[in-house]
Length: 365
Image 1 (cartoon, rainbow, N blue to C red):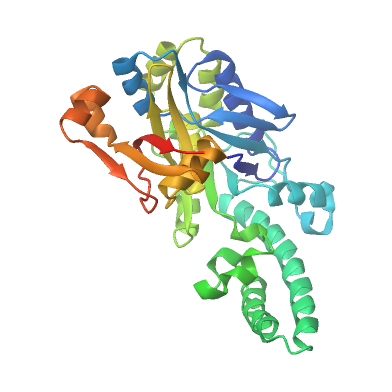
Image 2 (tube, rainbow, N blue to C red):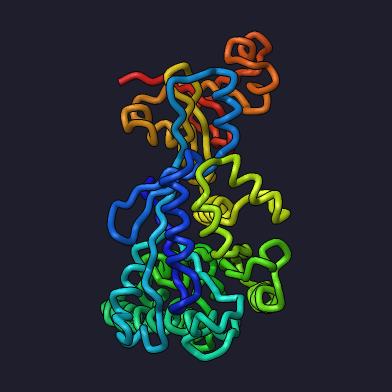
């Protein structure tokens, strides 16, 4: 689907270290294939154990995971909204993404200089927030002027839009992001069409020292407290540990390393999965001898829309979808067994796809 998460943060917080860990993991582990489509954009496959379990039963010729794009955006600085530190370019890069991964420094290290001289994740978060809010404020003010001119010609919708955006403007001026503005759902289109930076869903990544990788520390706790009322995801990662994991040659070595640290999953894996969740995506599966494959759709997608992800002809000529629940396939062992047990449902155009559905489409073109 070409959806992107942009990694942002102040300089020297660990953004590029995490991005490089993604890259190295892809070079050395089948779990995280990675390719660079531009110097700062990587395509990373989303880990999904369900594919592996299906493959054990079917023994397909190949396994295809779904992907998400990660964009490494150079460090923002104070004044970015006014062009400081190539701010306009960097903010433009953020605007092109679908979600934001905000890496915040939650570790002390005298050898890594902090741009503000001390470690304070809440302050650092606010620096980035303010720059994004100021840029959004410019966009909102321009749109208000535009709608105000339209309203003079008797356009009632434009006049209503002015009122809605004045609410958003006041919200931004109070130091809050547009995503939390008190706007009625029916009026949200006035905001959405501007593609504001602070309306994008956000994941906060607390980059901690190795000792704090499992439980976090006082810095990550402070950040979590500061964002507890935001509609946001928060995870704890040690970029240092991820760099070490990326240097190991085999999956077994990586798992052993994680177990020694008392961790179930690597931070990179959790970050990829959180990005996927952040974008409000789910996975449906196709399973056959040629391939077992994961496909990405937005949560709430209908069966024809899901079929269209494979090929537009599938959506245009959609007849029905044959659906098996993942748990049924695993417990019964095959499509034939599911069919015999009455566990294959025939669904029409109104069916809403569920995460983990195993689907086969019938179509006519």
